[in-house]
Length: 139
Image (cartoon, rainbow, N blue to C red; front, side, top):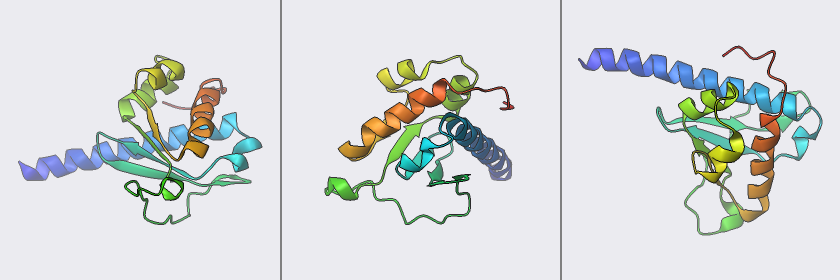
């Protein structure tokens, strides 16, 4: 029984990574030049505890960067890491146009946990990415 669970978990993790890659493509298409103004941030997909790190560069988000260990528990707000928490199911539904990002944010289907100076930028990023052209995304 455990062996099958690991196989399913591996498939789930690959699916979650695929969803993070699709999210990355959507954000990159929405922010071709303004991307460098975005703060570094993490995205946690809760079904599989899959964590993605996003660091903007001139060419997109850097897939090779090795981030420092995120700090989500510090009482020193400016030192806290920027985190977007959601589910893979929501990411895929949003990318397919089934769930508007405004509704997802308003109903806490997506949560942004970040220092105050970055919360608005991350909210705006998600809302702007909702408007991006999706013709090149394969869901």
